[in-house]
Image (cartoon, rainbow, N blue to C red; front, side):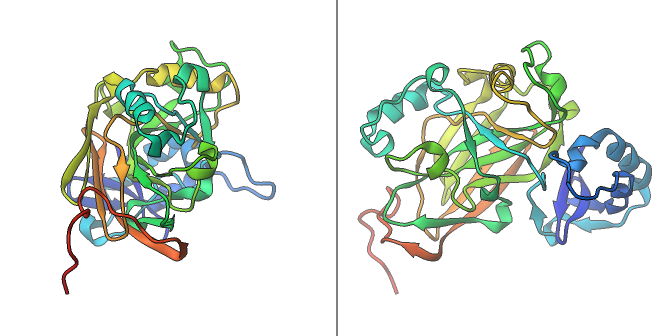
Length: 305
């Protein structure tokens, strides 16, 4: 099942090029008073909501997918857990490029561990990416996003996939610099999730998914999740050994080689087979600082009227 949020927080199920408005299925969710739960209510009650979706979907209003504005598939994630340098060739390129490592040692993921991104950085593909620091190199990173489905701590690899609700396309943006990753990657709009959540039962083998990313139609990244240094189960075990994972938490699994800069006006396309494809426009944020440099695609080109 492909479950989406769209327009004014409507709930939809995607069927080909159409979406059925199944917002009424949210009526099965429990009502809450302050203090609110520390989980995403939809993900925490996904089984009940999915049952209700199946019941009402045949008679639910059908709209063209192209006519709706898709939102991030998870409305209230408690945290975003991210895996740095989790593809061998990306580790090698990070160590080779001073623009990436800024004279800091780039250690293996087993040594450096994971990091957290602010949930305020999450946007939908339709919202686009806003670059705040134009005087810095701002890079794209295509990543499979794993959506945690139930609460767990000290989860073993053998149990890990029992804790997965579904998957989405993730775009982890980063502003290069000497500061900690969590700061440079938590800028508003720097965590793009979409276009929907594919429930775990529809992804036959998340450890073998082809994916790619282009900028303005030019290939940048192409890989398969089988190339992960720490696979999904290992990442869930690793993360849950430090903190409790909750329904709606997002796990970004890492990016392969080919990361590169983007500028205002660029368009990023990214797709994961069996999960989905997103298109993301890049623009300068209001009050952005600095002047944008050139990318390989724009270097040497003259502006035209």
